[in-house]
Length: 136
Image (tube, rainbow, N blue to C red):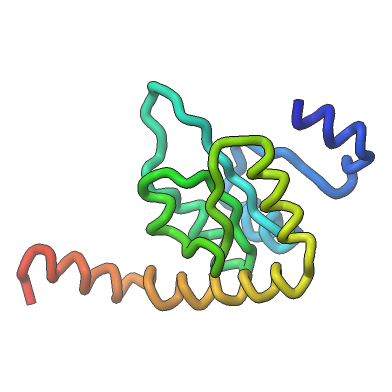
């Protein structure tokens, strides 16, 4: 259905759907992108609860569109570094429409970089972990 939408709207040169990507290719892909979209659908199977890819995308200055599930909200800030959505087509369309505005994309992208640098550096994570273990 998504592929048909892309084709029907002549977006093949602007939209690429990726699944598994080698780590060495990620910087180039992020650099060529305007936004990062990773909606998830609720299933009975396990799924990644935190989502490193949201942090990676923000580090490259991309605003994120993600489904509002536990863990994802810790990797981004809704309406600041990206947009958390419900699991509906309308929500995805609305979020993409909001991010068509270049100033919004740039502001969220910059906020995402700052958020990641402030909260996910190795030193910060070690400090949080150490406090949890009471090792300071």
